[in-house]
Length: 178
Image 1 (cartoon, rainbow, N blue to C red):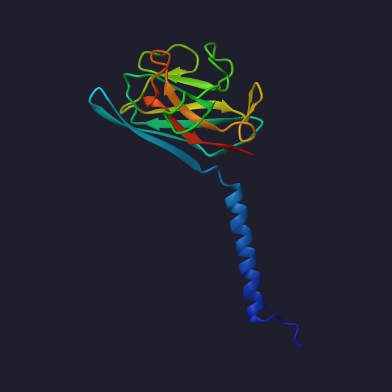
Image 2 (cartoon, helix red, strand yellow; image 1 turned 45 degrees about the vertical axis):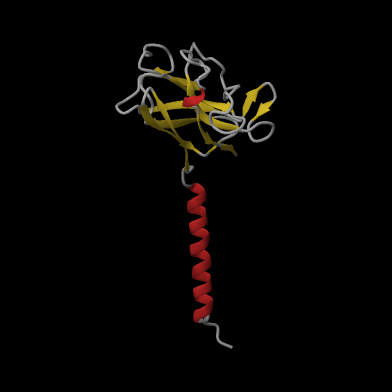
């Protein structure tokens, strides 16, 4: 029997090495982006609300960038990690990580508003109702609320304190913790 490997053996070995490299590359790449969308009509104008965030994060805590577009610049929104129950707009997303972080110490929420500015964790909408904000997320929201374990969580936008009961601006994008 020859000590030289057959062509078939070399091909199988090459395929195995290539497959292992592809798997390692996919595991090392940044988290894929999950997107939540919703279309609403408000004051005769139709808004195609969209929210994009990573679909996975580290359970112990991680800063993530959340982007949005198509929002109504006349209605401010909070961007946060919250417990969600049912479809978008069915129930107010709550509780949220960091609660009402008016001091800006947790970084767990961000207020996007054309009225805001100058306060911690606030920014105005960009052209076309866009925003890009960084928030800090972790699986344990406190009070026994553990995302993926005891409750379902999502990165959300919801109407700010000027119309807190308006569910039209609720947009959810799911997130899992690893």
